[in-house]
Length: 258
Image 1 (cartoon, rainbow, N blue to C red):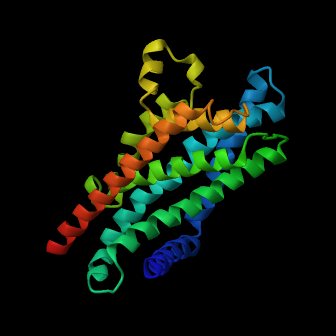
Image 2 (cartoon, helix red, strand yellow):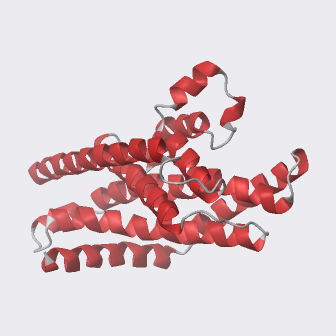
């Protein structure tokens, strides 16, 4: 187990160093969610009956789930898997002592670090704008980790099964992800949805991410009050992480034969 831990950490560190070396991706992943938060916050301040502090409190869940974690953890994991295939990293893995399990977990861990960093950035920016958050920090962390796991698991499935080249990534993420964001309330609040869309949203993990994070960050909800959303997210995260692992193993078998 100790060997797996060292290997997993080494893979995560390599991915994070590559991100820092490129620079531009790190800058964009920093600026984009903060820009979305500021735009949403000021728009809600002008159009609603909320103070600036209250507006930024309300915008944090959708900005974090719909802008930060979606593009870094889902889009980023798809990009990582596709890039590793194009760069023949998997071929080199077959002749190295590094295990496939450690490689999978390392990619997962790297995007967990990125997602947690973005969460800190979003909450810090909202706090600077006057927002206050009274909810339970462990519950917030649990929702964020389940959201990260869900996105990365889906990213592995999409990246291993549907994307073959880097050019495929944007179209793939847009096709599968943007409708989920819209239906989940990331762009348009769900209170404006007709009943038919609300019924569909109940099966959308993004909807449960936003509702759970809103409940524990803004409404100071308890575990019992957000329990339905957490149970859905936990089940979904387990299912897609398992699916991502199986898809990854299938991809490795295919690459080994090529």
